[in-house]
View 1 (cartoon, rainbow, N blue to C red):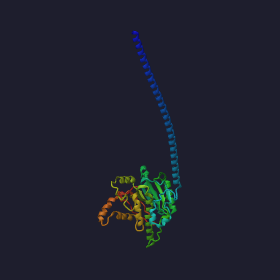
View 2 (view 1 turned 60 degrees about the vertical axis):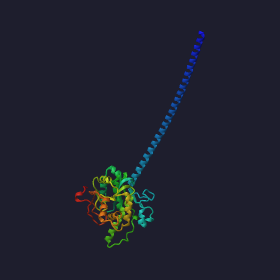
View 3 (view 1 turned 180 degrees about the vertical axis):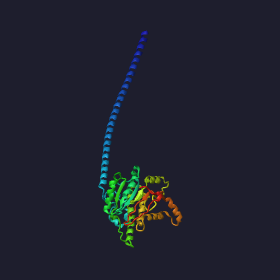
View 4 (view 1 turned 30 degrees about the vertical axis):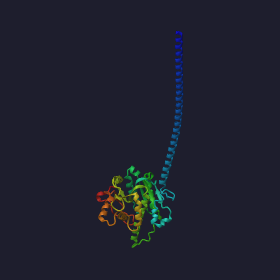
Length: 383
């Protein structure tokens, strides 16, 4: 009997040992499979890391190549721009970069321009900068042996900060058929203002002779009066051409002339004043009290202004036409002059004191002298 019990216990123990062995073998097999799976995952991860490393290296190499290409292209453009400045006179062809639509409005008023194809400036020096806040236009013609342009440009350009210079472009428009005067202006600017030309903050354009209509039909009471009338008519057209060229370049356009001195920090004062105006309903801002100088316009309004000036360019000087366009656009029929004048103060804003000193004595009209100043005695500027 005891032997039977012993045998049962031995069989039970053997079964337990066998079961435990099977369990252990099963767990070992599972662990082995897990280790194999883990190893496979590690190998797969290593392969992914290796592929990613190779891809990163390729991307890095592509980026290096792209940067090298960009650097090369920038160097080429800079060299091209430098060559353009040193070349001094670059006559544009019909396929170059001035917008095809910039001057199309002129063909509506001048039938003779409909036969010339695209209208464009004869000479452009600079980078044809766009996308800035301010364009400053300076129209210049020969004054015989006297010239104020260098003095004017020096004050206008040197009294900007570098950031203001970056956000603006000064455009000198040579409106004179005298090739010697054009060459003298180009030589002076390329020598004295080479850095501004190279950065794109200064440009020189020349108005083509074919732009001007035949003015011989103008009634002349005397020879001198006829010449004066022709001079005034041409001046209106000169400003119109310059405005159209500047219009797509900037948000605002400031009209200057070639015989003024800009006050110290004038540009900072202009930008601060414009940015602090709460209403956007202004027509123009006067930063000088006389004539057409120092008038700031929104560039989006320039095309309408030019259209109005061209309708009446034979009748009045441009500063008087500016007053007329206000009457047409802003004064309601039957409105009292007092009410219109009150609106005038709201949309024709005057900044005080004036920011520009008129220094020219020799007029751009041959043989005429002028002594008017844009500032009172208490507002005179240091040279």
